[in-house]
Image (tube, rainbow, N blue to C red; front, side, top):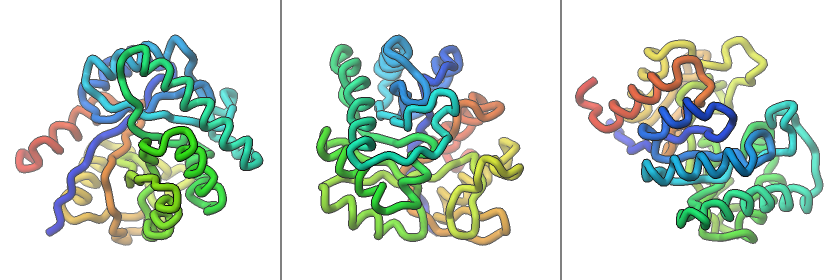
Amino acid sequence: MKQTSLAINCDMGEGLDALDAQIMPYIAMANIACGGHAGNTESMQRTVKLAKEQDVQVGVHPSFKDKEGFGRKEIYCTEEEIKALIQEQCKALDDICKENALALSYVKPHGALYNMMMKEMSLFETVCKAVAAYDPVLKLMILSNTNNARYAQVAQKYNITLLYEVFADRAYTDEGQLVARSQSNALLETEEEVLQRVKTLHTYGYITSVSGKHITLQADILCVHSDTEGALALIETLSTFLKDPNAY
């Protein structure tokens, strides 16, 4: 039996201010939108202050500049353009963190940038370069998969520490990739389904794909989306479970 320790992270500062305030006490890490797909100076200031009040780690959630498509549109950029957009969004949040005597902890790319980074090793390396050039102390959050060693090898070249993320509320393919949001089965629909996934991952170290295949994954971080239906209740339940698994 393999038990794993998991920290819950959630995307924040995306226009759901009241919900952010309710969710923040139950998470360990807040991925804050920095103006690419959502967010602005005011939303970053509000969210950073909330995170500080609840002793939650703050991460940069950079995206392609695509507010119309919420960062889910694939945009092909040069290496220099990718570096610039990541570093620009890092600095935007970093400046606000410094004003509030809070340190940035990590970077988690959003949407299409995240998915493309996981599919294209050259893009992944560019992201590593961008993070290392901005601040090599920052960790980089990636989608845990069956070939983590390949990503770790690249990250090591730039002295970047990786955080391996598993999505609590997204369906997985047999290959360990996320089912595309365009598919009807992209999300787990009930709290019971999500809790069962987290129980299995926590206890045995694997998740179950859409076809029933067991996929063993290294997991440091558990992501739950704030725009998932019933997100607050779901995150509260998962937080309670992770604090005391024997109670479930």
